[in-house]
Image 1 (tube, one colour):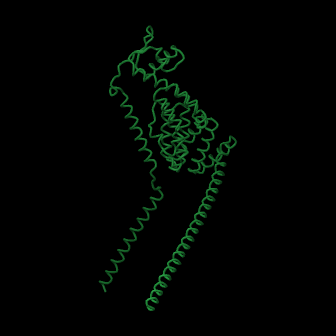
Image 2: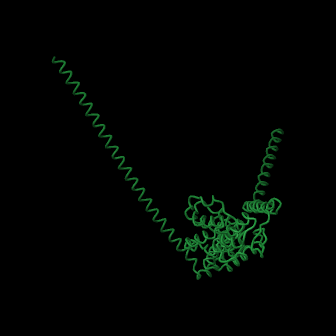
Image 3: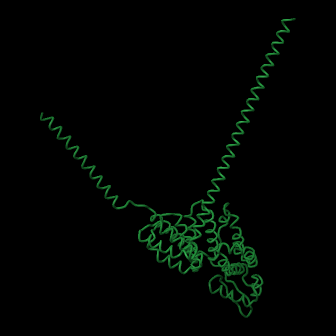
Length: 385
């Protein structure tokens, strides 16, 4: 029995040693895992601190740049900018001209000096390089041109410039693209067009464009009461975006849209009913608005003054009207402009470099001919020997 007990004790001892060894390995593994997690946590905190520090430095730098940038909005900076623009023009510094012209346009528009801004554009049109050296400056320039044209009631040109600014703007310029989209939406509403819903579904600007989505809905359905409610609710937003006066112009478009929907729905309707549906003050105003809409070609109808009714004419085939040709003309014009701009953006080798390359090619050719001649002479000498 003694050998068996001794063997059992030895097995138990080995099992105990293995258990202790496994326990030590487990504890060592836990310790290393804990140290690894602590190191990762320290590295994470260190990276977060570095990121916060970089963010703080970036914000301070941006704030300083914005302070300098906003300093050019003061009217006292205008003579200095004009002097710098004159020097840049004399030195043929294209990029400096683009930047300074944009600064001046921003200054003029900030102080509502649209006539001076338009005069600056007309005077610098020939000196600015076409196309621009910088796409960012080109986007800003198109935006300011659109702001000028929209005040001058040139809505088509303003819309084209805003679309050009959106195409030229970089993807990271979310703020610029948002305000340009707001202006483009307002211009489309003033032109009598309804912007597509996809414009308001951009995730980075969906919240900022919500008031303009409500405005577009009111214009689309010709609901004057809803339009007034939207304008009253978001007055502060429109004033902050410098679109309040433009939004007030849309009032007549809402009435025209509502009147168009009414004449399409009814072949004959009383003027008093039109007054109630459009929520106007009195039937006389409604009659005047209907007469003006007929004269402007907004609706195709006649007014029976004796009966106090509006009689709509039958809707003709739209393809027999000049509207399809006008739509094709607009599309062709857009494609032609895009093609011309693409050609203008192509870079060609300067004439001096072309001449240098041609001279270098001729020198290489002469060297090859001289080398071939020398080899032929050497062969002749060997044959004579």
